[in-house]
Image (cartoon, rainbow, N blue to C red; front, side):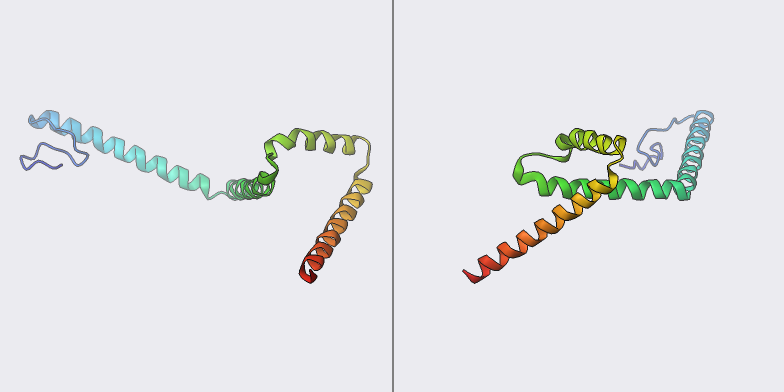
Length: 128
């Protein structure tokens, strides 16, 4: 990409043969380079702030949980985005009626019942 006549810049574009115009082009390229360095430094400073790091961690965790939930729901033909409006409506209903503790207890009982049924199914399949 680099010509041997010395008129091609490092980025592959042609430079002028006139020394005054070439000097202006090089000064302009230097300014663009310094601007890019300053922008990169500002991005690094911003990304190193604790609240920005925490936001990135939360985004990553949310994405991972959503991907896992979508993978679990794939055999049923649905996804988190389809079920989320119903889940939020249920959450708001429980919150407005102050049913948090009973709903939590019901969720725990359903989880234990599901675990027990799964354990029993595995044992029955293992014996047969």
